Image (cartoon, rainbow, N blue to C red; front, side):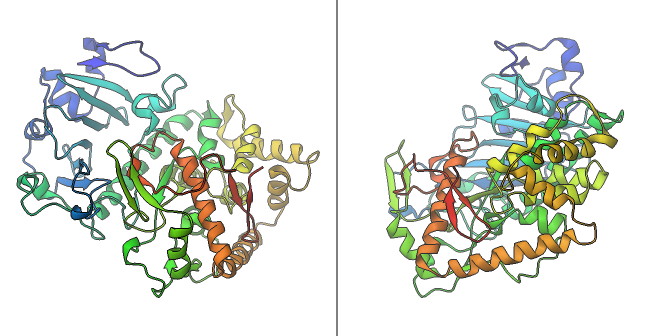
Length: 495
């Protein structure tokens, strides 16, 4: 058993007996401390004390090429991955295993996030054949040396990750879509494949695991009444630490000019999960704006949409399997904010004022990120945290123009406690009304396509962007100016 925390350790080294004894998750207790090092996922699962049942184990399947018709791309590699959620010590999932599905199990990657109930962290392990490596735990994701390195380039906040978290769970086998296999594909005989269930269940598991770690984290960082690193908490409110990918529920290949309107992802327009669901703003708009199918079909040709995988030479005109995939606010960011409000670290009004500073740009907002300049980076008492930040923003606002993020926050912060929810809801209703009108125009819809591509480019700069077929390509230049959404539904350059 070795240790290699990228960004901290110069090279892998054996764990000593004390380090190994401090690991309290099922992998350490059932395998590593007993000198057992399973080579394959089959060995790992077989080594658990209880046999697999539908109650304690669920198997999921994902493949970015899995929903491309077999006949249209016979030479396209169909690399797929299993995600296996296993409850070992009780009813709650404490092992989340990721491994190649249709590859040699002795050589494909094998990674495990294991919950340690004593330390209340996920331990991250990987088998680098034939050696197992401890790559760090949830706190390593937040530590300056290891943050953004190794497995923490995607597990950026220390929790488990499912990029395509919501329906229709793009690229996953789910109730919305089936991963395609040839009738005679020997993979069909794989015992794990025969256990595959829908990703709609994995969504529930991942949300629960994110919530579990978030609760443990907040309890730990506030236990003595002082937050040592306030910026590590507040960046979930003011910045985009991560994203999820959302899409319409409509298969792009089925859309024709005469199809019904498309419901684009609500998270494209605003952080609906935080503002509407968690904070409960009384928005009256019945549904998000609907896009005319004819405009979508025209945009596929206008912008030369295609799926391309340069490594294999695959190219196919058109959009991803489900239409209009875009990044939206991450569950893990929203969950930290939700729990901070629930526990009284910040108020709902404070969270709403921060989000409303640039609510039309729910991800990658330079304006909202500017407010991080007013977050203390030294220990701050829990009872003074919100007041400290709000006071710093208001003080800075006095010497800044009305358009500044600070002035916008200040204008909202002075709203009475019984009026701000309705005031914010009215702004959102007005904004969605503007979009509802512009999206009916071909030029307006094209602007939203350009905005979506701008945000996709921001996502592609993240390490979460692992696979070429996750997003479509377009003829919009890679160096095109970044775009932002305005309150009136128009799109403009970010600078």
